[in-house]
Length: 214
Image 1 (cartoon, rainbow, N blue to C red):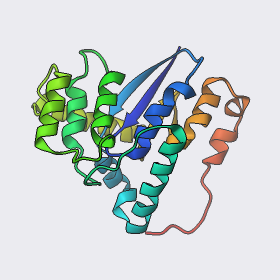
Image 2 (image 1 turned 45 degrees about the vertical axis):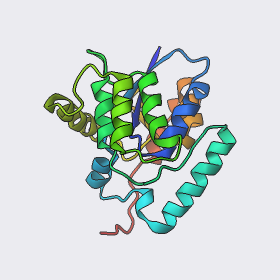
Image 3 (image 1 turned 180 degrees about the horizontal axis):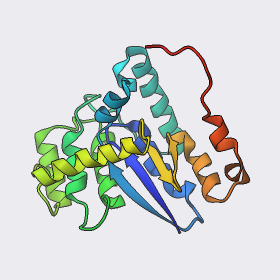
Image 4 (image 1 turned 180 degrees about the vertical axis):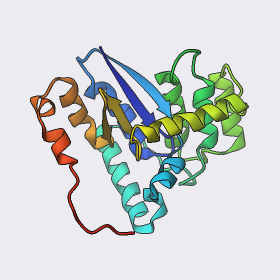
């Protein structure tokens, strides 16, 4: 059985698309998915990046592309009233709902969090909506507790240590796969594609001298 880490932040429409496509990508493969919340803002800051919604032309393209991709997948994707927004409350809620001894929340919880953002086109941080979501999910811990806050920081740091630079990211067998469009590649690796047994994976990432922009 393969164990797969799914690193996510509810702010990402690509993570929502990947969440919906994941069952088909893993069909027929014995697996367990560990859903691992992180803070995308912290990841981007660590690597000195901006999010796609923080660059005006890229933001316009991102929203158009994800709406098209959602239509192709048959997935509801309504742009929230405000985006980007601060996903801190949702990511903490995800961990507050995590059962003891588990690395992350259940798929049911993650789906509820994503739907809160991407279905309906409303404000993800509306206090009334957040309170209703928390009441429905009934977390076993207080999302605002020091314990949960520390756990989210630790989860983000763990992702960085494994080389995560964006979401969605998938970790399996010491390899990291990034993006919803990486799901076919992930499936191939899980099915034992011979390409992954040879030198190609490491050779592709070998350092090549060139100009570095500072």
